[in-house]
Figure: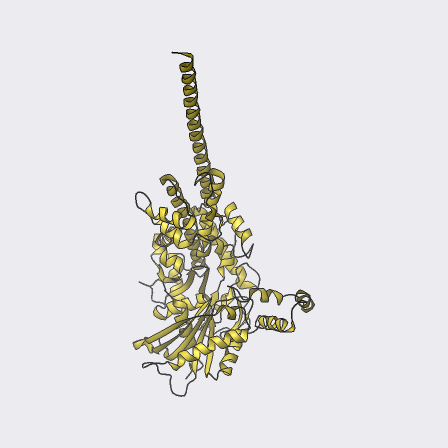
Length: 536
């Protein structure tokens, strides 16, 4: 071999060694990255852990906070609001009743024709109306005038089978899913607009007039007057505002019940089943309410209701306890939210947040462990781009190559991943959803424990106190919301955890049932059970 040949051989050997070294180094990096990714996931999984002993601590903490909230206004993170609903539907209601369900960018109007215990609901109709964006930041008069105009139009289309009783004013139940300080069954003062309704204007209403003037010193008098109007409804009785709009439209109708969607769900469930004692909303947000003995509410002022009980709106999204499992990922989500330090329980369990918790842990693994390769997919940085329905779809994927996970990663994050990465994505979904479902179950068992429905002995005593026939009767929890209805594994985890906490024998006396779209019909039924003519 000549000198040239030797040189080429040396160069070839060096190149081979370099390639081999590069491949070895790449493999070492990949292994190191994968080990780091697993470590990040395992730390997160351990932080989300909900062993039975911890859930029992959450149950007890829920009970303590419920007692504190019932004892004193502001005594607990749980608001434990009096709903003044002391006559739940029984099935004996008769007549034509309306409901207005306002809780977001759409509202629903509906009517039901009731025919007592024999006919129950003879007929029902509803329409959904989209609220123009301009009205969401306009004056309260404009908003309520628009709503009443649609309601009046709906009334004019009463078809065959809908018959208002002769000589009676039409009555309406008003589901109003914004923060309200309720003062009676048919009145309540708005605390603040949320969900995109004039949010900035409610903030201005909380500062001094001279500060407001300084803030808008560059505004014209017209724009200033408009902003003043926007503030006007905050602190006012929303039923009075609605009735005033009815007056302006010459609509002869009376609001006989003001409720939030959770209370409406309980009423809707109770109409068909007198054993419904608790209602839980599990959707974009979450809340719970339940039937409480009036004499167990120290903060109650005035005469106790004849029924001896009332519905308590817990506003349980604000529940917090040191026993709740919270991770650094949850801390950053809270810090980045519009309401840091508030709604802590809701941020662990509700549909609005589950997808973003998954996104955040995947982003951490992508940044620190190159989960999706050397470049982090840009869409991983977009808050709330991953929705909870996407999480449910990936979580449910049982195909050998996880095709649905591949699709979601491609569509949402514009990226691809190896099978082992897709598997860890499913594990993250399982961890996030499992924690949420188990915490909801603990919250429900906390309510059952507060009202004495958590053990076989207590359930029997509660039946006796309420004159319920013993055998075959159950305590029913009515569930509504897309998270419970459309996320099968979440639902399974919730139900299984309730059995773990209650024990098999006591769990057989409790039923968790779907009460779909109960809030609107529940409002109409509460209008009937609290009718001004109910003593006729």
